[in-house]
Image 1: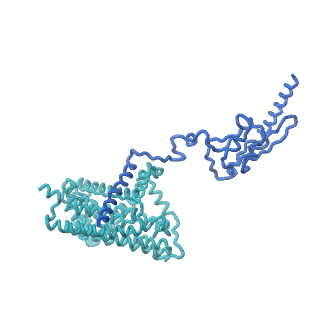
Image 2: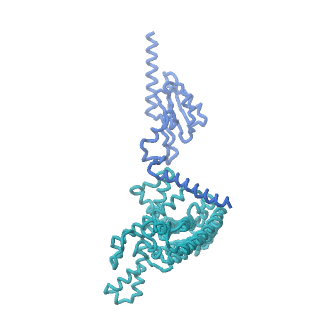
Image 3: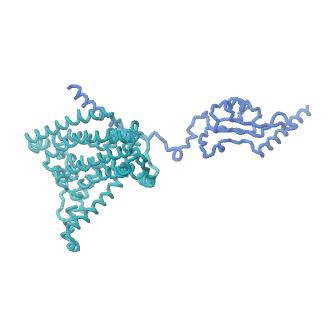
Length: 369
Length: 168
């Protein structure tokens, strides 16, 4: 986006009259709206895909009535949710109750600002991109606790508390395994991390060294836990807590929780692709100048590569969800603190030692000579 | 310590196994085992039911003797029969034969009690009786017209019998 803005300011006559700050502001607002236009239908469509995948895995059919193969099911669901009455319990803390879903959604939507889509397609290539993503996605937990507390319902509160405990404990191994990648790249920027990898699998950080390989799995499992998805969905365990922190919500606000959940699934997959799976790298080189922007075929190839990889990981999330049962609270904590954290530390130290011995050479480079 | 690594290995191997199973189900090789009832079934579900399954009751007034055995056998009295004697004819003629399918528990005792052959009262395979109004589930087999028909029939039968007796 910054690149695009700079180009507009340099090349378009009419923008000279207005200060460049305003041009940046307008472009950022437009960019944000574009992202929203991407996120909302994407998250909606993911709910449909998830239901069809679930159906297939359980030898059912799944929703297939609205439109061809039921692809407009999510539109129908969305319209239904918006039209429904927005009930606020009398005993609830009204202001917090109303605010909470927005915080949850904003927390997961803000991360899209630093998520890369292709070589040039990124809202803001922050030099602390990965840090920013983890910082703002931690806002989700504030919203979840807020909703649990404001509902004034024991199940909601329990769900919110569980969610907090879970997200806080899984953030540790997640960030520790990201640190291993940061050691390899020496940058916190998302585009920088992708550029440090190649298009071929042996140049991905996933196969860079054994420690990075394990780090990917630690990262992915912790990320799934951060999303509160099965098998880590104890905050909304239906059998114990009705629906956890969103029990009392209805209508549009409930829809926002769902939107945030599915947006989060995309975010963790995109981050995993960025950090470990080579991002948008394609075998083609990128032309310079404005042709490096949207219309270029290379950029488009990068976008498609990135989206394919991301949606494959999203599918893996769904696949996990329909395979594994829910963990118990104590099991969750055991997995988090007794297994994930030590393994993540082991990876971190292992990667550091690897870099001490071989520098940033990957296994492929060592074997290839 | 050994247990710790065994746990990790167990987690990895069992999850892989489970995901393998779900993946097999995801592939197009496994067809869905559910059907899209009611409107997108390959054949109507009624046709797939066994021959002797007990669905809605059906009644044939033309073979009925009006013996009311079925109504007496019925454990929940869901069959109500009104019958009358017709001057000059033998036995009874049905005036009303109602079955309240809302009450019926599909035990099939009435069909077994029916003494005539072929049976006047039988189960069909039809089971889709859902309706908005309970009254719709009361099946009325005899109306005014049918009653008159039955009376005429009984009279005719009596006349024939008389004629036969006279010939002897």
